[in-house]
Amino acid sequence: MNMDVRAQAERAGASLQDAFLLLEVSSQLSRTHDVQAIARHVCSVARRLVGMDGTTLVLREREQVYYAEEEAPERLWRGRRFPAVQCISGWAILNRQTAVIEDIYTDPRIPIEAYRPTFVQSLAMVPMGREQPSGSIGAYWARRHKATEREVFLLESLAELAAAALSQARLHEEVERLRAQASCVEGASGSGGDPTLARIIPLVAHDLKNPLGAISLAAQALLRRGSLDEKDTGRVRRILASVERARHLVSEVLEYSRLQAGSGMPLDVVDARLDDITRSVVDEARTAFPGRKIDLIARDAAGRWDVHRVAEVLSNLLGNALQHGEPARPVTLSVGARHGECFVELHNFGPPIPEDVLPVLFEPFRQGRKGDRGSVGLGLFIVKQIVHAHGGRIRVRSTSEHGTTFSVHLPAHQSLPILPLREVAG
Image 1 (cartoon, one colour):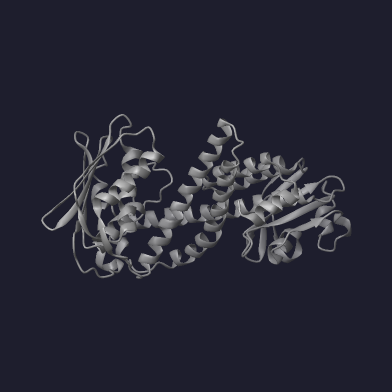
Image 2: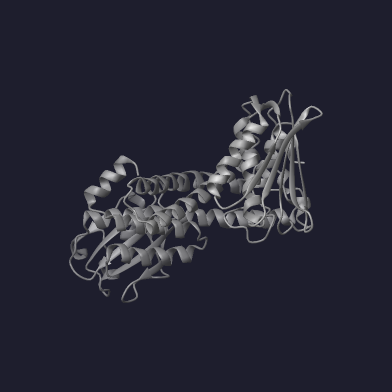
């Protein structure tokens, strides 16, 4: 947790239990891709966090606001739309700041006629998102009450998580649309820049990367306290794993956007050893998957490559093998050199990749197996672009009898151009 947020939390009186609940919410929301489900969960958590009498989640729809969900002892405004300039939820969105109102009947921002039939006497309304709020969260009390600093801090923290979750849900919807489009249009992966992607990339970059980074720092800070029991430590580690999956998704989509825009893939080529790069990737995987057996057969393999990009290729392939391979059987990597090139062969036993998927496995928005979690189908596409940018090639064989083998071949020494997507997508 950065010092500003930590100081604010301590000043507000937020407890360790508050932090745990917020982190658990972030983990749950990162796995939710339905806007209505997100709205229901946020309303429920808001009442648990703050203990108000009612709450709403309001979405911005251009010049209007839509009361998407509520949790209250009586019906408020769920399902209704109002001009943003005529209600307090719109005020919070348009002004990008929290409104704390102890007495709704004395505040000129409140449309009294809309509130008079309800139980609401006091409220707090917080915007979801700081730069361009996507909506707001309302907290309502049936008695005169001025929201405390702790209550405002918790509501604002929850609003940031909700904004990130809604952005991820929109991203997921766009990805599903593009995946369906790619399956219907031949050669979609070789097309030029997509205006839809141009719209969603800023959304991802601003509304997902920063909140995910803050969540990760907060979880790491909890681990460093050293006072957590085994159960709580496990909960925080699961939260960190969920955040890392979401951050990986964001990175893949940003990479795909750059390639689609024709920016190419710049390489920082240096003298390197493919066997050393592979050892490093294997060591990381053994730490991340302590119960899995990974065998490495490495011979000298020297050349000139972008070390970080090659490691990205191997990490992706090894991660897939560990995820889909038979847990009781080892994943095997073989590294070597012959005929002026170096190679890595990565093999695992387990369910084969379906035959109808193999020809399109390296295209964008494809998944090797149905139900892949935490993936939008861009990992292997980016792997292929990295390999081709080095002037290399990648192949896959997969059968139920012999398992699955990915083979990566890289030229040992070559003057490498920066290849745009259209030259390497074949």
